[in-house]
Length: 205
Image 1 (spheres, rainbow, N blue to C red):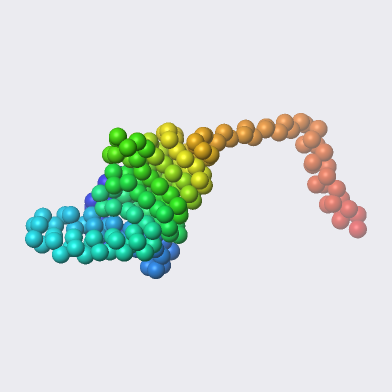
Image 2 (cartoon, rainbow, N blue to C red; image 1 turned 90 degrees about the vertical axis):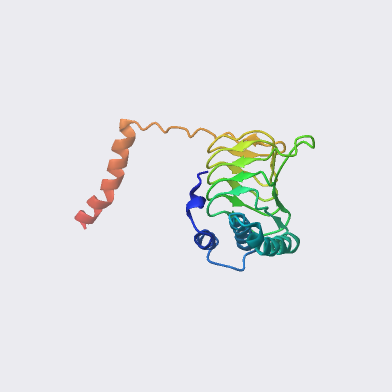
């Protein structure tokens, strides 16, 4: 994930998220991300006195999203651009979690710590990571760019870029090699003859 969000205004980030969510402002996922963006933005207000009313408003909206939609996305997490949270309910993101650009998180997902004696450990997701419904990503693990986490998978180890992990505990889904089809010269001649046959019948008529 890059720090491109730092160069965008709050409004520009929200418009990007709105476009990524199909331009539907009623989606709980979009609203949760919008509240997150606001929470991050208000921390940029240097004066504590001026920041105070924004903090009160943020806490109210954060609790509304958490209690009403079941989406817990604290401002302390580092979220990239165009995050999509599909559906709602039982979605928990650790405050130290890192999420890259263009990621998708679905209902029932937890991105949290694994051990009680290491409460600050949190997952780090690269760009374009696709997390299936009900998946749990726990501990200080790194999910590479373009990786996929299957539905209800429990991820306890790193996942390399482009890989797909499924199961409990999650394991890498091995791709079956595509067999190469050997084409002989006779096959080519037979195909050419078959393609030429209809043309010959038309000329005879």
